[in-house]
Image 1 (tube, rainbow, N blue to C red):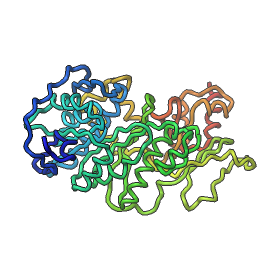
Image 2 (image 1 turned 180 degrees about the vertical axis):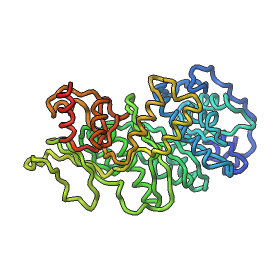
Image 3 (image 1 turned 90 degrees about the vertical axis):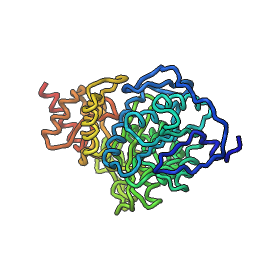
Image 4 (image 1 turned 45 degrees about the vertical axis):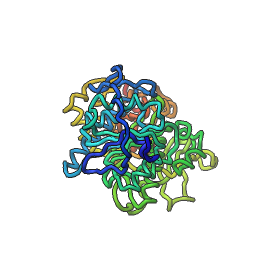
Length: 426
């Protein structure tokens, strides 16, 4: 079988008519189509078999969020052009399958570097649609190479999903280049060491951020990932906005859905530094023009080691309120909102994210045990503390990122006063 090297890597390639295939292999022998593997798993009614691929059922909530976001984007885009999705590290192909079956994508490209997974991927996608009318392709290329080739051939996608392992962010620039303007890029990191400040050199090389230990490392991990994407987009003359940011304890996994926009943003108001004072517990954000002036206003100005600075990273909102509200409406429409899958309630998760998207809320969260320790009281009930802070005129909510923690724009000293008042009323 004599075909080009690129064609051999994507032998199952089949673009929709509106997007002509760049690969023109010579005539080859007809092969028997792969039989769908025995069904072993199901997500929201879509059946598949993970085979020997790495698969986590705990990650289904992240895939649910991706399907909801991609569906809203497809509806907004309209039928004027084919809706194209690319899963750059597809594993067994469950995400690609769900983009086909639930989002209604016109074409999905499923790629995984491991050729050993080809029978599993093809079998799962064949379960939805088989040759010769299939709307999917399977390839086995390095993700960065695949994305770069799509850009060089001017083949742009509406949704690109990169479910990577570790903290390698080399693919981000190539993914942005292969994305249509207005398209969605679903980013991933499992680099918990960098998020906790244990791998500062790694975070600096991957995301351009120097990370040190702070009390809210899981949120820092998300902001580090968004900041890396924002930096790469600016280099290319674009800018991005995060539609939602999701942290999952298993793994742990940091996932962010960003939307690509043309042109650079004016200023760098959402890209800067976070300062945390270990002495008083207060956190603040600082811009590049304030470097050299980073201090804390607390009484302890003697110990310079009490100040921890991380960045540069994303300091703006983690979510888009309007988009999340539409996602919740769609989840309700589909009957997903009120169900619990793998211990996760989408309604509760999205409600919490909507509250977190309040633009008044600064980066970071405060754990109740830290409040109790500093105020020298028993931990106040989470709901009671949030309601009390709101009555005082502050923004406050739960955090989906940190268990038993709150996000608020209330200064730490006022927060301690409120906690003591709650103790006195009980």
